[in-house]
Image 1 (cartoon, one colour):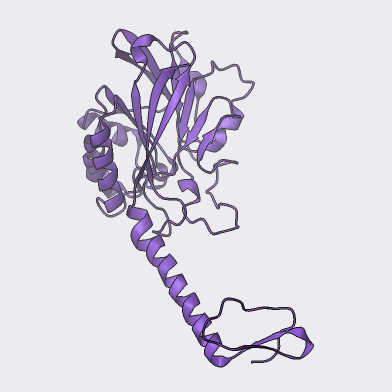
Image 2: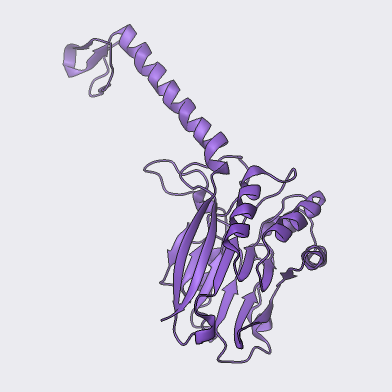
Length: 302
């Protein structure tokens, strides 16, 4: 092994490092092999984590949302968000864990923010999942880009949702009643390949009702500024998978229509926005540094 000026192989155990001519470092063959073996072992461990462990390790992230003017009857109202399930070959372990988590949470409302499915023959699995994730007062669904890519019409997804007591919102809103108070939820079409229409979604919605918005890809959030829309107290999105595979020191790689958003809270937007890391995987069936999550949001007066 010749000299490499200016490079250092540090942390090698069991190998003898000697300084060669010109200030470089020469590593013994045994030291090199041990270091290489350690690198392979580390890479194998990372791969095992990314493909075998992390995709199945669903976290529940809990957040309190302070809402100005929230009716007292809605204090403590709990919302579970699931997103990006990506069914492609039946029920997968992360989806099963997510269903169990939502069942244990027993939320008042469950929202599923798109990309539930990647293939049109998976609708029965979608129905099973939505049935297992139902909120006590309602379960609301929006479309993502993958529903479009799979050729799943809105009418098909709406029928699946209705079969299990859920409701699809595509440029529509619905109003929930809870202890005599009202909560409005606006659902937009997918921002990437659909045609989101806030004007149509808000049509007929009375003013003064606490309102939250749902849409799949978060990049559209920055387009709502200055349009005159009544500001919701919260927006929920998914799509990014939190980067799905996050390599150290490198920026997150996110799909088109993510905009500047990766995961978690953004409060410098049209309205407070939470971007879920989602539950499933797309493309590479692995996650690293971006574990799947079920999101629980509890409303409280500001």
